[in-house]
Each structure stands twice: as structure tokens, then as C-alpha cells.
Length: 304
Length: 109
Ligand SMILES: Nc1ncnc2c1ncn2[C@@H]1O[C@H](COP(=O)(O)OP(=O)(O)OP(=O)(O)O)[C@@H](O)[C@H]1O
Ligand SMILES: [Mg+2]
Image (cartoon, rainbow over all chains, first blue to last red; front, side):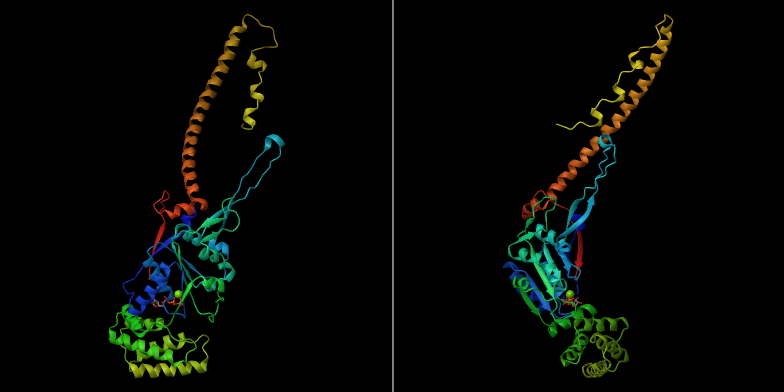
């Protein structure tokens, strides 16, 4: 019944997935560490392609994939498996005592969760945004990654309390840098057991390729959009620097309304304003937003 | 040795009564043979009917028992292979006896 509750994933690239030198290089490095037997951790700001890269690496590994998303509410039993219902046994004993005796015999039954399934069958685990879970919840991973033993919390109906981790088991982690809201400092012991690869924003070539692939715009147009986003990013004026997602959004939105990538076009300016000046502020500080608006207008005119 | 249950203990139905032993409080008379015959025929009819009912009931019970046995064998097998103590070993040999069908989901990225 364990497995009936777990769905395994088969990651496959979409036609608009691009494999530039930058992506290839990262993938190969990660695959090297995995072959050496180490879990890999992609760390980087939002929109740097961590999740996508993890899926790509997982599909290269070629084993079935289970995915967990970090969550404040997670406890170890969420990761490992929880008690799932109980059996009710009624003993009706009228013959001897002439009293209706009802005995509730709670037999705790275990339902393994994704982590257990991955360890048991040697699947690839993607733990996305793992630092969003409370550190205690992740303690279970310490022995899994080091001793390759999974500690099953208290006896499952008298069964063994250890599970040997299958040799094919691989773990991929992603996280945002620690200054992000809602992120816990990852435990040092856990981070010490994995190889952390810090991801920066994509290089220009990759960003252009992604925008092209996702929107269908020709190279020249994609380059212009990416340019505006990158210049704004580097200006340092934004509370949150715009990511490749902003560039994708501009390109896709423009396609829908048949707009042109032209600084003089009202539609283009409007789309850039909507997407870039609100995406980059959290609460919308009025004075800063005005500044960003001016910059967006200027860059859109200058580069398009 | 199994513990004795309700069905193993002799109960009221097992006591031989005046009726079942054919005794009477009244002295026997010649002409009562017809009456005896009549009474016994009645009892015979009743018991035959009961026996037929029980046979039918027994049939259903046996059928159900066979079904249950079948189901239990299947479940015991999957329960055994589900246990983590075995799972660790079996998972190491992907083509081992536990080949399961997983629910699969294509994740496009
Ligand atoms: N190689 C690629 N080819 C095409 N699109 C890509 C590629 N890598 C990333 N993307 C796109 O870039 C965007 C951001 O990627 P992703 O979601 O992986 O970032 P992330 O680092 O996980 O962000 P977050 O921290 O916000 O979760 C997505 O729209 C994704 O589809
Ligand atoms: Mg992500």
C-alpha cells in the first residue's frame, strides 16, 4: 500500500528546453559529482534555473524521480512516512463475562513517503527549496547521505528500524541563498555532506536562447528584450533584480498581442513597465518604483 | 491446541429431552402407534428441512472460505514484499521478484 500512494516522476525536456554551453557545462559538472557518489546542491537566486537544472540532471541519471518541495510545516514523519489510520478490533465477549467488551486495538500502520521510497528503490530524489523546511525535519537526511542508512523512527509494528539505502539512490537539492524570506539556515552538517554549486544568473547567450525558444521571437528581438532586462538588473536600482522570467514574460505577452520589440511602441513600453517595475519591488516603495519606471523607459528606448 | 469456544461446548440443543428420547409421561396404549408415527413423521420433515438448509448454508460458507483464502494469499505476498526489512535487499536487484507497477507522471521541464 506504500507504493500505491507514491507517484514517480519521469522528467523529460520540453522542445523549448535549451542546452547552451552554459547549461551543458553545469550539467556535466553535476553529473561528475554524482558519479563520484556525492549529492549535489544547486544554490542561487530566484530564476537562475535551479529547479530546471535539477530536473535535467535527474533525467540524465535515468532513474525514476521523486520530488519533495521544502515546506515550513514538514516534520520528519512527513518525509519518512506517517502513521496512517489504525485498525479497530472489537472483541465481543458475551459468553464468559456476559459483558460487551470492546477492545480497541490500535495497530499503527506505516505509510512510507517519498523519501523512503526513493531510498528503498534507489530512485533519484529532488528536494526543491530544501531550506524552507525546518532544519530538524531534515535531520533524517544526515545518516542517509553519510552512512547510507535510513533511520525509521520507532518500530513499525516490530519491524526493523533501519533501512539500507539502495546504492542507486541519488539526491539533488536546490535552495535560495539564505537572505531570502522564509528560508532557514541550512544545517552546516547537512551542507557538509553535499557538493554545493552556486548558480549565477544565466549568461546572455543562454538567456537569449531561452527567450527565443519560449516565445518564438527571432534572435534579434530576443536579444533586445534580454538586453533591457540585463541592463536593468545590473543597474542595481531594483529591490529584486529582474530574472530571466521577466524576459520570458515580456516576450510571450508581446507575442499574444502581436506587439513589436520597439522602443517607440506604446504596447512594448507598457508591457515592459507592467512586468519589470512591479516584479522588482516587494511592497512597492513609491519613490524607488518611480525611479525604476524611468530606467525601464530609458533602457527600452535605448536598446530597442 | 485451539482454545475451546462457544461452539465446542455442549449446549441446550445437545440435551436429550423427553421429546427426542421418545418417552412419555402417559403409559403407552396400543392405538398410539399412529400418533407416534405422525409425531415422528413431523419431526423427520422438520429435521430434513433443517438439514437441507444447513447443507445450503455450508455450501455458501465453503465458497466464501475459498475466496477468502485466495485473497489472503495474494495480500500476504504483497505485504511481505512491502516490509522495509526485505525491501532494502530486494531493491538492490531491480529485476528481483518485486516488480511493481508505479504510478508514473511525465514531468516536462
Ligand atoms: N535550460 C533551459 N531552457 C529553457 N528554459 C529554461 C532553462 N533553464 C531555466 N529555464 C526557464 O527559466 C525559468 C526559471 O527557471 P527555474 O524555475 O528553474 O529557476 P529557479 O532557480 O528554480 O527559480 P526559483 O528559485 O524561483 O524557484 C523557468 O521559466 C524555466 O522554464
Ligand atoms: Mg525553483
